[in-house]
Image (cartoon, rainbow, N blue to C red):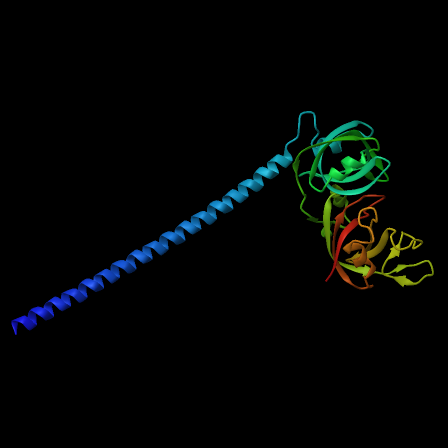
Length: 280
C-alpha cells in the first residue's frame, strides 16, 4: 500500500513538473514573439524615418543654389532684358532644331521656360527629365509669357529632381493662376466642349487652332468648368501623334469628363500644353 502511495505521489510530481515546463516554454515563446514584433516595429519605424530623412535631404539638395545663382523669387523680380543666372531641372523637352533647344524646367519654387537655348544634338540627348542645368541668359516676356530668351547657354550639373504635379483646377479664371506658369500641373473634372471645324461642324478637337491642320499637327480642344470654357493644347513637339495623350484626345467625345496633366504655358493667357488625358 505504501509503495502504491509512493508511486502515485511520484507520478503526480512528474505531471506537475512537466506542466511547469510547458508553461515556462509557452512564456518563453510568448516573450520571443513579443520581442520579434517589437523588433519588426522598430525596424519599420527606423526604415520610415530613414526614407523621410532621405526625401528631406533630396529636397534640400534640390533647393540649394550655387554661388551667383538666382532664387526663383530673384529671377521673377529681375528686370526684363536683364541677364539672369538660374539653376533648374529639366521636366520636358519641347523641341530641338539647328542646335537650339526649348525646355520646360523647374525647381522647388517655380518654373523657367527656356526658349531656343544653345544646345548641340549630343547635349540635347543628355537632357532627360530630372537633369540639373545652370542657365545663363536674358529674361524676356512674350505675349504674357516670362521666359529666358533665345541664345541662352547652359551647363549640365550633378543632381536630379522631378517636380510633383500641382492641382490648379480651382485657380482657373483667377489672377493667381499665372503664378504657376510653366509648372507641371493638373486640371480635374473638366467637361469636353464642342469646337467648330472649318465647315462649321461640332467636333471634340481641332488640328491646329483653326482646324486647318492634319494628323501630326498640334491638337486643340475646349473644356469647361463652372460655366467657363478654356482651350487646351497637345503640342506635337512635346507629344507627337505616336503618344498616348495625342491619341486620347483624338478619341474624345463632346461631353466627356476628363482629368488632365501638363505644363501651364502662358501665351496671351492660360494655354495649357497637355501631356496626359484620362476620361472619367
